[in-house]
Image (cartoon, rainbow, N blue to C red; front, side):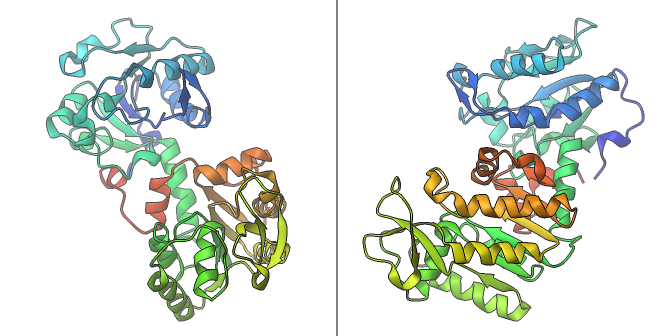
Length: 392
């Protein structure tokens, strides 16, 4: 996989640049700018190299229809302010555009195409659509790791028609994930949360042979507690997951990977309740498990203290209520404290986990924070991502 920074002459070359600028929009206002901030390095690099930048991205799921509420306009305006340069947004029908229609003004270095998902051909990975997109440029750069699990035209098929390169952010993301999957410093620990074991079983099974510890928290842990015969009251759980839990424990024994799950919990009678600490044998039928308890928190902190690498995906509890955020906060603070002494490599991914870090303003203190959701998880599962495969 070639990286764009290794290319010698980019002067005046038109670069078709695939980015993930799928930011949350509320009435045309950007609610979170993280994804825009992440693409600044590639934009600044290409500007310095005097390239012409033709940006392709999407917002939301317009399902092949034009939706003015999902226009790239507010993102263009935000980026203009950040880089202090004029950006042109081209809203014309892509099929009527030709290469000569772009960069007519010699001072114009950045052009945005309107939301690429306004065209159904994008999600169909359509050959002719990809070929037409490719005709606008001299080379293709994918700097959208978080879209690379999608076999879409502007991520995959377009690479068949242009010299294709990985962007700076995409390479950084892959290198961070390699450090926790192949170039591992042991002991290595994975903390994994979320509500469903079925969505994470592939990841857990793929990581067990490589990891020393898998810590299961959040709603997923309720399934294990229930499997072990504990009352979990009204807590969320998944049906028919006994076979999956058996697989986790059988595989972990085979590879000497320690599976850790809650020994005590914080409960409430409803989501907005105050928290009460309970041992597992004290949980009643009307309790809802909403966080890990102090014993469990201390055990997890001890495991982190003895780890050299940590991967974290999924909060430990219902952090939206501060009464049930302590487990997640303590995990975050322990990792941050250890990183200050450069004695741990930390990778965190998933929207909810990033939200936890942002609440206590520690995201900057992790080695790598991934905004990718599905791509992050599929990479950890050992799957080859279509967008990465296309660059090879």
